[in-house]
Length: 428
Image (cartoon, rainbow, N blue to C red):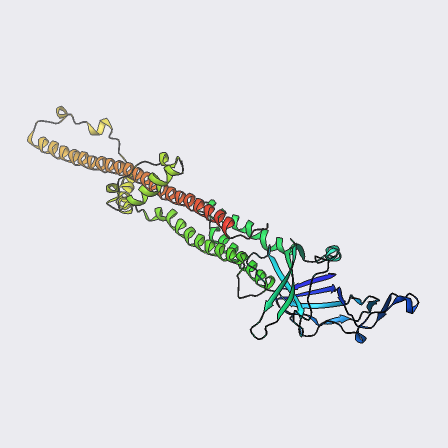
């Protein structure tokens, strides 16, 4: 065999071979002593009978061959070595593409003569197909196995046996540049899917990264469709691996959106549900050996029965009164009332009562202002406590989101490793 080319799209094996035929013809023999010791003669193949050995599983009815002379020996032995181009059909299995191996057969036999007339055998000196010249030429395929078989078959139409010679070639695709283009990038992109859950929920580019990975896998899938031969018998496992990763990326986009919404749920000042807190903080956090549970304090749901925004609004007016409150210092010479300075006449007593009444009104006014200041101070303390609870509430929602991120990270890590083990094509 000189050259070989496997057309995967047409399912044809094209080979360029030197065929070696040897047979015995009793009608062509002579005595060398009568012809000046002439032991061999070379003639054209058109002047001598030749066996009609044909390729049974041919993909082209026209066989190209170069005319070669026949060597006739004086004992009736004939040797013919023509050069021929064969197009044989070959079943293609691309399930392990681009690390696939193909097995092609070439079946030869006589078309018009049965086994009793032409008994085909392998040559004693050529019991195997010679591929030495082919191995020197660089092709896309390596021959990893070859075998020959002589088969005798009987048909319903004829009682005579028919002999065929079957040559089998096992081909292995070489690791060419296109194989690395289809395999290495998809592994890197699959690993980058984990980065989606490694980024904090506050980053808005989480979903953008996942969408970019989805587009990259879609591009690789289109390249695979162009590179792999179309066949209805098998589907490349690499394509199944691409589709599986695209499903994972779509799932990561959905889950990432859920995590982002959970992390921002604290802005609505709603408490974390008990079941979610039990599953995420008290359950998953302990499984992952995380210390985030110690960072939170248990907040009962009763403390959030009244909306926190209403509390802040009620405290606003008290704060304004606190800022407007000014206690006027009452000087001793105006505030102290010395009864002995007032005359004891009835008229002076009436004036003294009026004066005391005005002082009592002033003291009452100051007491009301002091009471408002105390209310404003209490409201300020409550507002600080409320803001602390709000921060604690937001922290709990963020911890729930971070715990879910870790859970999804481990889930996707297991899924990616499992797909590499089960779906990724084996190079060996």
